[in-house]
Amino acid sequence: MTTQDTSNHRTRVAAARRARTRAKLLESALMVFAQKGPGAVIEDVIAHAGVARGSFYNYFRTNEDLLAAVANEINDELLRAIDPVVLRCDDPAERIACGTRLLLHAVRRFPLYGSFMARLPFPAANDSLLGTRFLARDVEQGLAAHRFGDIGQRAGADMLAGLVLSAAYATARAPLDPDYPDASARAMLRALGVDEAEAVRLTALALPGFDLPDESLLRRTEMCPAWHGGNLI
Image 1 (cartoon, rainbow, N blue to C red):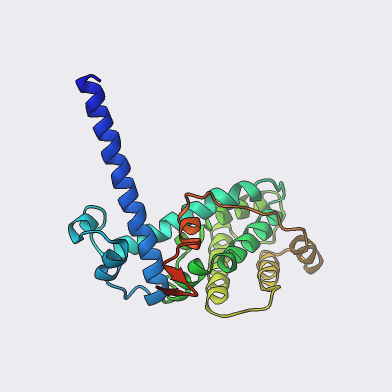
Image 2: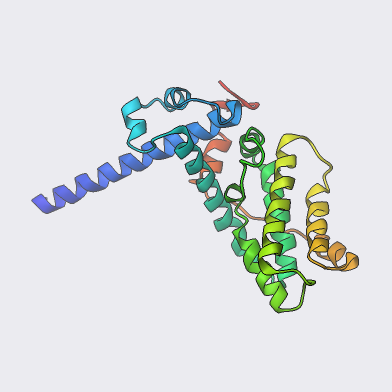
């Protein structure tokens, strides 16, 4: 092995080690914040992750930085998983109905994610946590196609983001009727100017499935033996 090969190998090993440490901190932060809320302190996360304090500060400066990193990681995972499914629909109204329902079902599907959201003070559980960026795109396209009523693109997107956020927060905090995701999507479509019959039709369509890769944060923590029944053990 040449000197250059040795150097490249060491660089790859170091990068992989940094990635594993950062991933472990994010996993621990999600579980700790889900149980204790954003008031959890860095010491809690460090202890659960089993890393040194100095190692923590190589990746994050504050609790807020760590919380934002967890939220962004979940956001990106959900966008990568849900948006390709949503884009199978040509109709922007159908995309909004489908994406909203899938996002709300994700809160139920991943209890740790729901616990994490439920402990964030509203509206701190902001739209970056929910992956609602697709809404602005679909509102714009729906308006261009005269699919919606007389509502501006920015106002429509902001309204939907707020409604999705409120619905997801409610879903995370308490058991709701099984049809709550569908009812929420119908309300959003009606607010955009879609008539009642069409809103009912769109939210009655079979909901496609989606999955997250095994290496995703939500999947890694889903079966973590340190999380049992909503408590760290």
